Image (tube, rainbow, N blue to C red; front, side, top):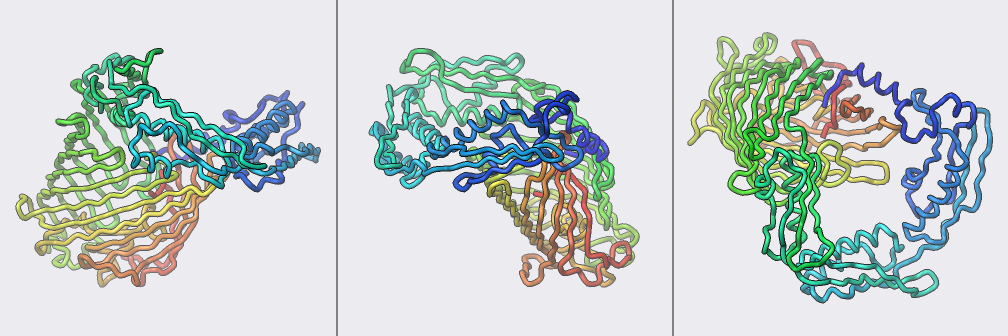
Length: 619
């Protein structure tokens, strides 16, 4: 999401008024209570100190001028000491205690020191599962392997809770809706315990009556058709989870809850589906600024139940120095089955790149099928008219014949008819700010041949990203590769040629600056590309975070050409601001191996660094 930079600065400067951890932001509090200049916690070895600090209300004041002061309150501090003991106990250290505290006045406030003695952990000597004979042996073995409680580990509350939930889910998937699981422990030594994961399966059941509440304008039929279970079918807990995922994926509801109801335990298990409808008519306005797109604006109107049946209609218009135009998208969520959806789109866009201007007018259709909760396969067809015009500087220096452009006016136009199949997988669970998991997309495109149109090519592309949390750090990596193979001399639209460089790919260069060069030094694009990005993301203070990154990649003239010894690389650092208007991004990238002879608009590009201001993570 984009925003005006000035608005973000105003919001940032107003942060003292909305800080959740300030005890009292009044003049009286400022005069009566000293602020905490330093908070030192000694003796922390077995747990993550940053997680421990997050549980405390007593915190040190930030040195940043716009951040509020944290005031010291004796009652709050005493409660924090109890929280420390409970924190350790929940992680398997029942003997931990606070041995001493020191609140020392200094010139600006008080410096607080807390000394902790962790003591020995309560270790798991053995783990056994009882009461699970109703589960097939193969599923029981999987349960025991997946259980987080393992011999040799401290008996932490979160591990016990997750193990109990996993065991209860296994029983639910075996048809036991009222199963109860208890984690029992018995002494097995001085600081060791034997753990018994004990189950009371209860009666086996089938799905019974379904009650739907909370829907005012969305028909019951729309909700029922998304369910993965029906009355009379054998009870399977996973069917309730899949039903929840399908209903959330519709985008029609702010919240969805599916639960077993009733005080009795009937064989026909009654379930209740409680929903809260979202605003069916949604209008959004986005305004922003970036070093590449300059000032931008976007308006979108969306109806979430267009013509009933959960159908969605979206109209969007956008303007920036790079792209401008509009599109309309219609989505039919239930297309023969709950797992399949149909999307139809019409569009008209103009793209102004440093090298060329392009106009696209046409439409597309797309059928998607959800294989699992994280896997999806899609088939789409695109037909549009494309017109590309090289700018005057580029037209004067490139080989128009080699680029399949009109010799007289450096223009390319024609009809593109393209069919494509793609497979995607997303295990991050977070579309905007992923912290763990991975994403993958593989796409195959075909134009020409048995399809109408002016262009003929095959295109194969793939992108994969992985995210991992290590303490407060987030390690993020991405690799992209693709190759487009023309089936005749003018088979590839100029706008589909490969380029790299800019805020989202190789940040040491400007937009589309990394590619094969004409004899005059102008980037002209290629048919194969490879890009690798790596980031370390570190929370800094409040809404601020820091990033260090390295990028590598290149574009090659011919199809299916990848040379790892011919990569351009850059490194740099950046700042992120998590604002109510979205994540703002400022990156500085430095070229490790510049491109000899690179010229943009006829001017040599000798500067080895680039500064990018944009929104959202690069990947």
